Amino acid sequence: MKTTVEVPAVLFQRAKRLAKRMGRPMRALIEEGLRRVLEDEKPAAGYRLPDRSVGKPGAPNPLEAMDWATLRNEIYGGR
Image 1 (tube, rainbow, N blue to C red):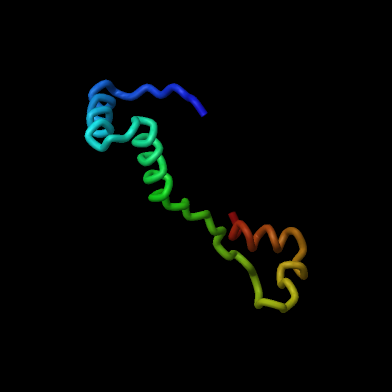
Image 2: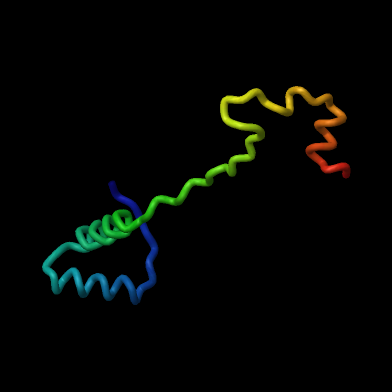
């Protein structure tokens, strides 16, 4: 695939000289650089929602027995 990328002139000239010293085309040098960056990339840690469960696992939900006013008071602490 062909694409156009803008890089600072100084960086381009350094890369061009290195490619010439190595006897490789610029394309190969750019490909290698991209591969290295992508290989070194660490996957972002996903967000884990904190456990805010109520009651004991497998037991009936204690909030289901409350009426709305009691439940609201439990949630907002009387605010």
